[in-house]
Figure 1 (spheres, rainbow, N blue to C red):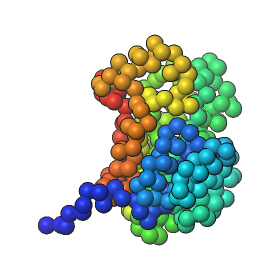
Figure 2: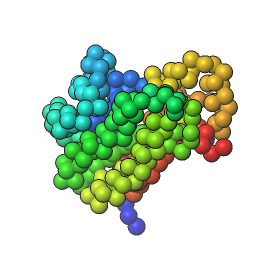
Figure 3: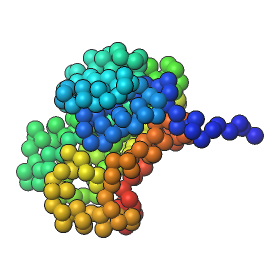
Length: 256
């Protein structure tokens, strides 16, 4: 019989380095804080340096800030170098950066479409591609993408966003096929309605927010702490035999 690891050991990230995009706010910031609390050294990536520095200031030396505009694909090689500078090459990558232009189908612009797919779909691939060799060299890595309710549901004003998030699910499977033989698991989290900057227009309408809560099986919208356990699972040894999967963290919204 195989030896049993202590449950706490399975989720312990001591000795690991995590790169979290979109770390300046919302679920990205929460992800950076949770991974640091679990023992990882964390590099937060976002455009807003002041917000990143605020995050790092509360990290007791375990969180570093690297500003970058992920919509500029030409910056990805330099970003891969920069995120390795504070603590060494990351072996955990969490792609939480996202953009939703909320353009209705007749109003979708080329610029809005390109920006959405660049940040939501292209950046997770090209950054993973740049960081995967170091993870493969040590035979261990965790990549977590952020899918959405709109990965499988169509919402008003979400054409470009939904297309990008549907693509994230297939990208996750394809990256798992490519890199899991090297010990790198790749999985997606699918948050429901959480109160973040990205969902501010939704929560600005109390009636709409209430309808979304009623659509869940649990009967409420998500709170930041609801992401903690699922994220730690996918970033740790607890999920060693899980790859290419989508874990919806939506209170059962997609179950109804």
